[in-house]
Length: 324
Image 1 (tube, rainbow, N blue to C red):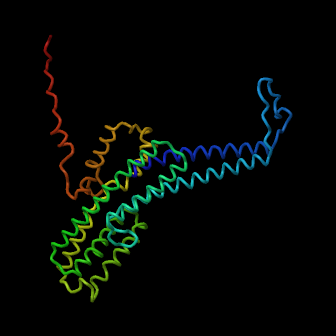
Image 2 (cartoon, rainbow, N blue to C red):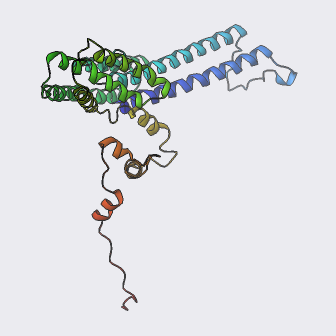
Image 3 (cartoon, one colour):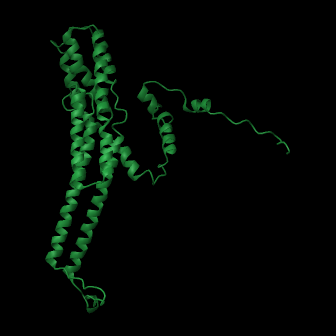
């Protein structure tokens, strides 16, 4: 979704913003030229040719008004582009299993409503700026993904409810699992994907959600330490069920597709697919894990062994070759 929205709006808006900045530069140079005036007789206006109409001289006041108008247009377009960028980023913030600001579970219909609101704001900007029909078609293409995102949240929520129901715990403990434990560990997962400073508020909120449960008089205080550890482990597992596998990088992919792929020779689909496979299954972090291993939670089979098993190697050539 974010990939399509970036290609639909961000690229055309950036083009208009650059054109407006160029207009500001030209208006500023024209104002300086009018303000200084001709410095020598040779710098004065040349006598026009008979076949060409004389060009009207622009006064200093008119040049200042033109510069002010160009600056207002540039500032307006820059503000519109920032709003579009904020709405595209807001889609990624809305598509979460739990609310990051409050630490509570969210349902699919609420998430779909928030995402639809961001799309409507982007569509309003596109219509106001008079962008092409292809931009609106890309927005409609991105909008068709919203019901699937809502269905994904509902599927995950149903699975989590079923798993908690099988724990055979009391209703207060079950409510604490849904309302406190699972959202708190989901916040911890999101904090791990951010910098230390950006993830600190999420970790603090997660700790505030869990701390009252084990304090004297809390819902989990009456349970044994082993039972508490089991509930915490189950909450961690259920918090990891919902995977935002690509929504947090779609905007980046769209920007690279517009600005960087052609410069780096990545506009060929096969080349990008090869680099993606190498990144996911071959490159490792300092701890020795690959992206695929971290995503699936287990080490996949060797990529090169799978390639060798799927490729038919040509037979060795005859030595010496046969004579015709």
